[in-house]
Length: 179
Image 1 (tube, helix red, strand yellow):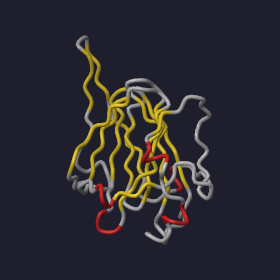
Image 2: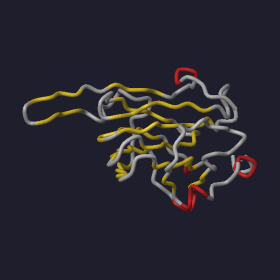
Image 3: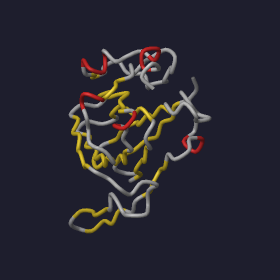
């Protein structure tokens, strides 16, 4: 499949947020009603990753357990990847990526129907997720991060940190049966 620019995907949004700096530090709004396509969120979560080159993904929940996500990097940096798994979409099986970091202050809204993952670019990266549905571990699906059909072009790195769950993700031919 192909990497596409973010504006080729329907419903994906990059949302800029202002950062106000003072002699004490900074202040920024991470969610404001009406700024995203989805305004009914259910859960907030935070992920803290100690190492640069930590790869997570590609995760999703489907059917009635599907989740939309608003992803914000509070500290550090990630290259955030998403794959369109909506069969009726013109970008079905295409993927995109965006840099989210503490300096650009962008947030990424990912609608239901996308697999999601990232690779950290810095040590001690902190990521905030706003989810529109509950996390359901028994309904989470992990698509293999380096599945040859999707063929994500991850950055070259010699020292990758990845979980057993992500190393043992399903190939697309197995995931396709679930969609």
